[in-house]
Amino acid sequence: MSANTQAFTGGFSDPVFQSQSVFRMLMDGMARPGSIRSIEHDAGQPDPLGAAAGAIALTLCDHDTPAWLSAGFAKSAVGEWIGFHSGATITREKAEARFAFVEAGVTPSSFGLFSLGSQEYPDRSTTLVIEVAGLGEGQSFTLSGPGILQFKTVEIAGLPEAFLRLWADNRPLFPRGVDVILTAGRSFLCLPRTTKIVA
Amino acid sequence: MSADLATYNFAYLDEQTKRMIRRAILKAISIPGYQVPFASREMPMPYGWGTGGVQVTASIIGPEDVLKVIDQGADDTTNAVSIRAFFQKVANVAVTTHTKDATIIQTRHRIPEQKLGENQVLVYQVPIPEPLRFLEPRETETRKMHALEEYGLMHVKLYEDIAINGRISKTYAYPVKVDGRYVMDPSPTPKFDNPKMHMSDALQLFGAGREKRIYAVPPHTEVVSLDFEDYPFEIQTFEQDCALCGAHGVYLDEVVLDDKGGRMFVCSDTDHCEDRREHGHVGAMLAPNQEAAE
Image 1: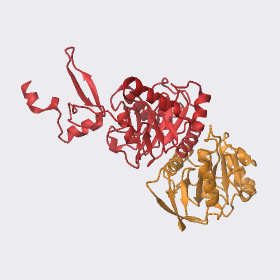
Image 2: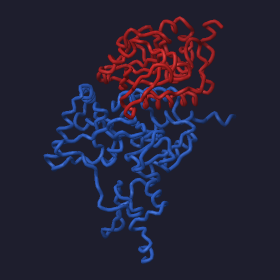
Image 3: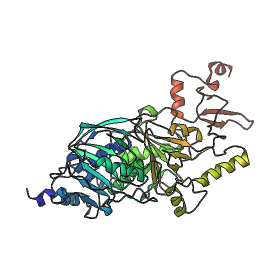
Image 4: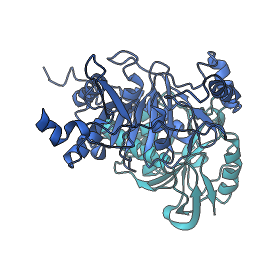
């Protein structure tokens, strides 16, 4: 299939209930950072976008939310697919993006170029959806913060090496800062800006 | 003509509105206690009837959910009955009055007596989300105060209460600090309920429709009522037990019975009261010996 045809295929078969189901997992996931959830409904996203990332895009994006794509996604049908199904515009300006989709193995050089919100309106910040090799396997990390009773241990495979340093720079900006959703195939976990991560 | 033509979308709101509210909810959870502006819609009920809470509930509810709605703790008062009927009609969801069976509890001004669990979400209806609003009417200024974490004015207000009345006289909508950062209005719940917000197992969402704000307290999050070392925060205590179920240490409503000073105190949480009575607890006014005397 050509990139162009891929853009028009897929989408939720039952948008009202499937996006509700994905959102509910996102809400519970954001409220309980580090808990791994798995989406049931396939959004028929084009490669190399993962199933969870595709479902999240169709659940949250629309014409109000410019999206930024990492280089690998940008040269695939992903941008057109998100645009066709959600109405979101694809932006090359990180600071304009409400959502950013990052393919596996790519490390953003900094979170600071994305929108961090302002001190008055910290909600106007980018949410990054970052694909990793696996969740529930690989290196152990200890999470703490709101939504977590004392500590939570979570295994993440293929987390970019620089991630912990970027995250450590993000945390002190509170209430400003980006929020992250890590995806791996059908699974995802949420890392709101309040979460502390220790390797 | 198809019967489907004139029906509303599931849960009344259109999908674009739900997405906008859902994004606001996610940001609200990631910044505990911060008020996220959202494009509140007109609902088929007047402002002040819980349009904020209804929009939040409509955006999160799914066909598997079991909804409970309370108004001042009661399942059977006007606001609770009409909102419950609204969601039965537009979302066709299961409803309950039993706290333990509900997955979403929309509340006006009470937190249920029974401890909420991990799988439950509490949705508050909020009239004035800004705790500093009565001290500083300008939104530009209160926003700056939150931005700079400048809450001195609130402490002055509480201090003046003590100077004038000898105690902090605020009994409801008692300000709290969430996760050590944002001062938040817990909506006009009695201060009796404030300790239940602290380290709750359940996610708490707040919706203010007229004021167009959504905020949240994630589970297991510190919620501390503001106070002073020498005037610590205290909750209301009641000398009486519930007249119907004999419960002690719960929030009671005073009910005037006649014009000769007769009155009774009953649980404000009707489900809690009914549940206790079903389990054989009997209060003073339901005691068998008294029935026999009548």
